[in-house]
Length: 426
Image 1 (cartoon, rainbow, N blue to C red):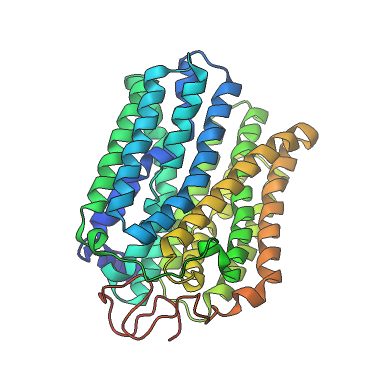
Image 2: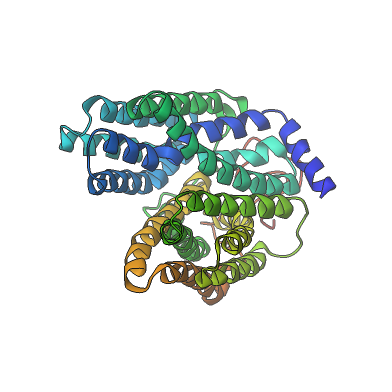
């Protein structure tokens, strides 16, 4: 573990690495806190929970639509020309919501839709930059794990920051502050040398873009169900807290889930892994599904908190390994779009899981809602098992990027060490 910790320090000491990671996390803060901020703002304006949920849902759907489209634009035109303008327009959408409130509902819906569609694909952009920044393949894979862990921390800390801003000022001020911070984060990324110099590989014009890769489609299908599992846990944890008459229990469960992901992601990135990542991903998702199963037992609070932590252990490793698989199967010239599709599919799955878990609670109680999470994990594993042929070896047609020695899909400027192939065989 000490060697792995040293490896993380080595990554952060690389030129531009700490700035890119920090800028990306800060730039994604509006997206991580968007649904919570919208709900709090709507309630502060006197709106109902139904209206708050409707606005948050529109924001989520719009984000899911915009991410792959903007990711494709980044692959075609570069990061600075897309990421920063998108961040500014997205922030303007939230500023408009804060200005008009819910008094003019059609305008409020337009505002959240604009904010969602133009959410910049900073997450996919960072993963496209890692090879040119870090050079060696093992360092890139470790960065993927570190990125997954940092993401879990951000999605835990972000909502807490919003609630703090609301308590100190107002819900409208929270919207403004969070989005100004997000724009500054995006600006920090696009002004960096790696972002300004990055170029995607030439791509064949095809209306399907990244979705013409069978391996990528298989992965997206699996991670839809991983997202479904995670989304259902959010609702199930609220129901469990209600059953025990303590709102704080929800916080304990979600914190335990994040802690488990932090431990698992740190341990996963602390060592080098041999063998095909596709096979490793199947094993990790199997363990993830196994970790979700005991949650349906809904034991006492202490035991349930421990089970929540256990269920989170394999989440960050699954995400980190999926990044590697995406990189191996992304069609040439579509790496940012491919990563953005993974983010979108995961988010849509989480939204569906949230929607399904609610009726599950009403029909069978809290245990049924946790069973939805277990079912999602099992479904994700079944998708990976039934699509082994598509995921076995990245296709070597002209449509799929096959790196040549000394270059990679993500390293058009030759910054990586000779032989680094971004996970693909030459």
